[in-house]
View (cartoon, helix red, strand yellow):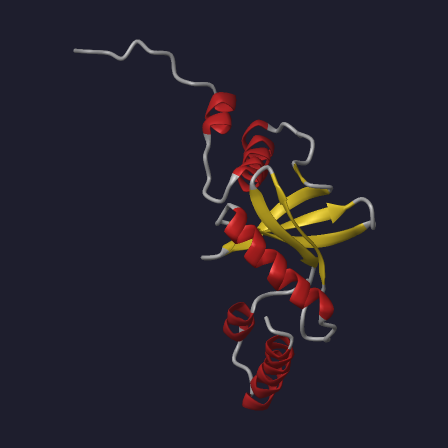
Length: 166
């Protein structure tokens, strides 16, 4: 019988080596969450620029969304960290953020900042509590006038963004 005489890595070593998709800031949020859950260790909140990252709240093909705290303006924000890196990604995001920042509409989130930190391009924006449209629709059967009303408001926000060049 052959045995493996190597020592098993510690839980802390496993957490340090974890490499979740989404870049360094996202990875650090996930590691802090793992340390808290597995080891009971509270670590300082990871930062992204001036923001203290609180948690990962979602993600998709474009990037990851984080909940964060802005200590300068004393408010919670949502930060979208893009998967793409580099000058072209930064230029595109800044152009989109500038267009959104000029837009003031009740159905479009406000943009507070767009920047790059340690090579990761991000947009800090208004944090909106609630669920996404899919979760809202799946939560329970809804009368069609209620669905039409929500979709109409979403369409108004989309039309405003389109008119602003986003």
